[in-house]
Length: 123
Image: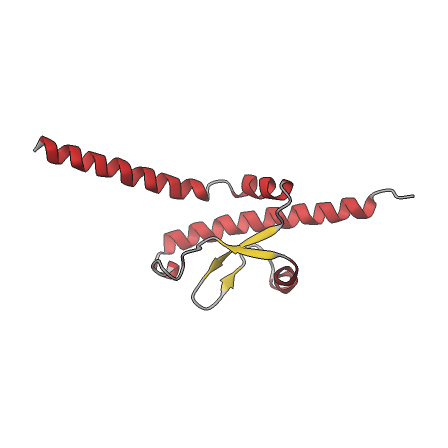
């Protein structure tokens, strides 16, 4: 009885730590975007679905421009090997929300950088 209880507690702690690690990976999209931008990484994130790559936070008329100029990193890298993300609405919502805030922040930082370069006084 005690041995079984210890096994259950042990498995629960492993499972809880795994869930915590997954949720922390997408916890701070604004800070992640700022850190990536300051490291020189100018990429957007998307959610890979079976038929398309979603680019949340970016309006339709800007998406084609961004897809040509910048790389897009899928948040769900193992979308082919794992279960379909469309069948897990909570996880899909989390990924879309993270991608939305990340992409808006990166887009804002890129626009600020272009404006600063344009307004920089040159001889």
